[in-house]
Amino acid sequence: MKRLEDMRRHEVQNNSTSVDNANNSKSDITHRGTSNGKETNSKSKSKKKSDSAEERAQLVLWRSPIKTFYYFIREIPCAIEDTRVRLVTALYDPRQRSMPAYRKLLIFLALLGLAYASYFCLFKDDENSRKVKEQITWFSYWVFLGILSSVGLGTGLHTFLLYLGPFIAKVTVAAQECDSTNFPRPPYPDQVICPEIADSAGITVWDIMAKIRWESLMWGFGTALGELPPYFMARAARISGMHIEDEELEEFEELLNRKKKQDPSTLSWLERGKLWMEDIVEKVGFWGILACASIPNPLFDLAGITCGHFLVPFTTFFGATVIGKALVKTHLQMTFVILAFNEELLTSAVALIGKIPRVGPLISDPFIKLMDHQKMTLHNSSGKDPTGSEGGILAFILEKLVMGMVVYFIISIINSMAQSHHKRLQKQSQTPKIKE
Image (cartoon, rainbow, N blue to C red; front, side):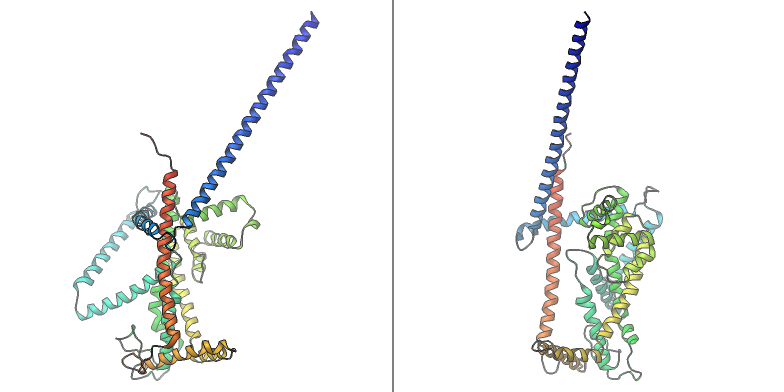
């Protein structure tokens, strides 16, 4: 009997062991199947993402002009609506669950000022009003150029190199040639001609800076305004918790995740520079933003995204940005251009370039001809060269270069907005629809 009981126990143990082994093997197979399924899904998702990115990269005017322009037109109302939502969300105070009263008052005053400005420009036509309109138009022109320089549409238009820098150089050369900054108005600022009476005290760097200070300040203020979209975008995403389709914001969030998970030594120099910028803005605050805005800084867009993401107050961000860009940076740029176009230094530099074998005269001779043309027009009351020449080949090249850069800027805006709409459609197609 004992032997029979032992044999039964042994058989039961063997059966249970075989059942456990079978269950374990099934679980292993199931786990492997699940992991393989996840890997397959992740690979398929990455492949779809890469295919979508490649298709989006092909969406440019010189490859698919009709489709690109169609997507560009379709994206315009979407971009306007996104801007409205981001602005309203950024003005919203999550702690009070409403828009603060002082923000409503500022919006009302801004709309009231805009209405009065429209009335003034449309219905006032006396001599003093015309002068004020001319000044408003002139300064608004420089503010608009400043916005284009930093707003981030397409590739960005370097309006300092194309407009403000040449304007400062023209005024500098004219002030030194005329020995005065009291240029007749009109035709200044459209044209610069010498006054009949020169200043007896001579011209200094401060005199030239005083002549072009307001244009530079308006341009700098425009660059500060152009930094607001990244700030409002990141702030709206942080407050509302919604996902905003923007490559810069997505790169910033991905960079923060990599900073937490990975070793910083694996990051590239550009990524380290972005993290350094983020650390300065987050830890130093107002003075960090001021320092980053006071120098030519291609990574300053990240400062706006960082301030919006960490809910830095608007007055802190915008105040530091305006002081840095409109006051500090513009005065540094003015000083550099004025000193660079000092007559003695300019003559020495052109003579030095002319000594380069073969290539030197091809560069220095057209430049000398252009400078002589400018000086002759300064002393002509009509503002034209009495010889009838147009400044030579160098003036022609510079004019076409500016025109080409403006055209490329417009094309880049169309391509960028068309690709944004393509990305928007891809996301809508991947979002599952809720059945009613």
